[in-house]
Image (cartoon, rainbow, N blue to C red; front, top):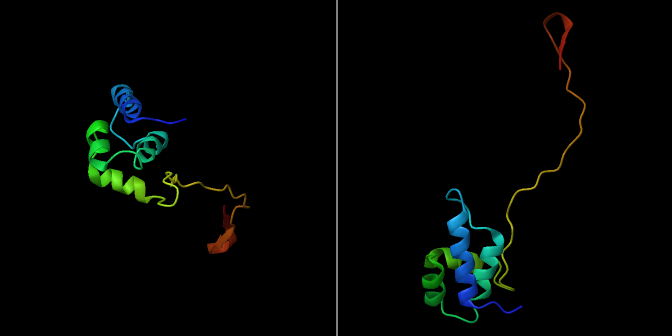
Length: 95
């Protein structure tokens, strides 16, 4: 689906009005902003979306091949290990 700058600007405004604190821009909003890069100038995008030029460049440069945002959220694997037993003074064991 083609997204135009007015739709994205409205989505950004709605998100800003409902967020509870300052924080990271959601990845789907970033993808919307980046998708505009081939159709509009950076000045048009930053002005309409209320973002700065540096932020837009960072988003675009995340993946310059297909202009999609790469989620850099760390993911952790759970490791099941037995507790380590350590002998200390007099043979007492700690787990």
